[in-house]
Image (cartoon, rainbow, N blue to C red; front, side, top):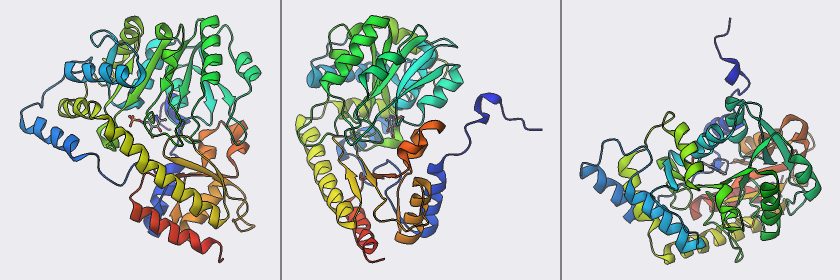
Length: 391
Ligand SMILES: Cc1ncc(COP(=O)(O)O)c(C=O)c1O
């Protein structure tokens, strides 16, 4: 007899764990996991240490510390001209991950539908399963990862309660355009649907792209929960400090779930996150310059090795089609990820993991590479990729 609950029985262990284990065994350069192998800004790290040594080690208020809620509101105004009342419109969570889960729990009922774009970040659908909510998938297709406006329009129906929009997008690097966001906004308004946005890569953009907050489009402030975190912007993914911004009634609904999931999140890290969000614009500009150079360099490495790159506009991932370089026995993305890890010594993620069963074909010939790595790590990967052409 298995004691595992039906609620989680279908989840299994992810292919990410398998590839990470394989990467370790083979001493491969790991471009699989989306975590930087370098540290965040020293002043931010120092602020956390100072807070711990300054006796900031007890529970924070469930809604979050004032200093961080104020910093989240100021950051929204500084970068997006988004006016946010820190007292009622900001909730601090354990990373964006908890914010999304709490938003689903707090804003949907069992039997509702939530629209997601595919490929879809891996926690959303299990979150929905635990909430008793059904995902409705709208695929992104082609080199631009566009969606079919008619398909999106048809996805909205009487059961639709929310839509999740992740921009910049993991795993594709797509940055939703104003035109695309406007269509989403029109449909949300028409069907009285809440938008939940995941914007954790908001500061990692290429080629002068601009990040647009769905909440800043006409009529969307009152129906959008904007979610982000410090993990990617400040290279501290282990901190798990995130937030949800939205009108007081929506934030209150998210908080009802949050208060019984984590209740409150790490006080000293909240203090340091507040300092991080207030760093001068120069920090954010330099982050972009650094990622732009990593992206350009790795696009060249992949192309020289014979991969077909689907150029990302944001995030720290690059998707590439591997068909021209893989040996004949490699037939799908999972086999390619295993082969690249064991034979070439570079780990990547097979993107079919981001698709529902019936759409896995859409990710079959692709690999996702994370480029949030030190230049020497990328150089080691480049050296190994040079072997590809010689096999
Ligand atoms: C799209 C997306 N959302 C959320 C997260 C996790 O964010 P956090 O660490 O703040 O929970 C990630 C991390 O990979 C991500 O790619």
